[in-house]
Length: 391
Image (cartoon, rainbow, N blue to C red; front, side):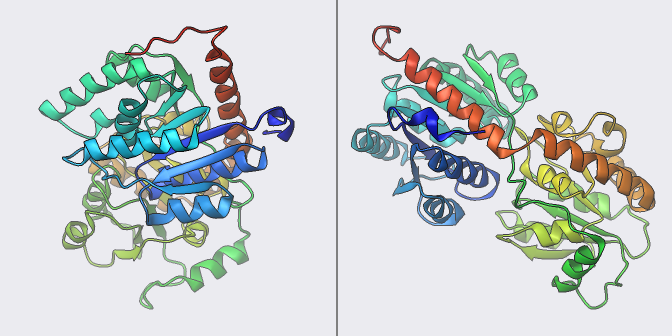
């Protein structure tokens, strides 16, 4: 847990350089800066305007400044690097914490090792692409590692993937954490009330099995795989809800079988989690997904694909029921059917998952470990203890 006394001697300034500004990355950064403000740090969040991150970080007490940056590399990269460099000069941070591939690219090129730098990939860029683009991404990550005082992974499997790709780095692994005060179990009556309040069609029976998928509508999150699996389902009355928005919205709508509800983005997904019989996330790649952690903390069983971070998210013994190969609609349909037709199994899985998640994935532990990492790097960067090489 973060303690204010850790920073009483000198207020530590941390510049979080972030792109994207929605979804799991935004939630991770918002929770992190909120904890850092409480601990007496001075967090500055540089990110594109709009989206949930800028407003959430400001409410949390961080200084927020505009860093116009596209999600993917493009012709504006040079301007983005120059802007990042100006922000670094203006705020004179003790530590730079770059989140995700784009910020990691622009931030490390802007700093080039002159300020202690943490790069947190939040899933590797080379997992998101194929062919020549993937090879170029690997080459950049190998090169960029020299300007990372630490590469911070959210799972051991994410770290191993970086090592396998040939990155020579100083590694830290700190699991994602969630706000356990926000994501809490709901009693049966509260869960029924949450479900009754949701915008479900009137044709959905009150007791119909409900599967919820929370995530950006994108290739990464694999909703297309889920829709192919849903066509194979033979569970009477079962309904599927996709909570989120994103670039694949129209394509997914065209591919969806009848009865699938597109709920759109939601600032508070708890009612959907409380109403769900199962939360499913069939991702193609991750570092460690937040939505399953949030669901398990509420006592809702999950079904997730076996990508980075998945096994480390689950309680021991849940793999046989809650884990399926990525991009396998048949396996996904079989596992979903097994869960939806066995209420006792769902109850047992949800109860075990709740206890495990609430004991392991507290965001306060995550924030405390990140602060310890910053303090280590700031100490190492002192001229009497560390000689830096500018390249």
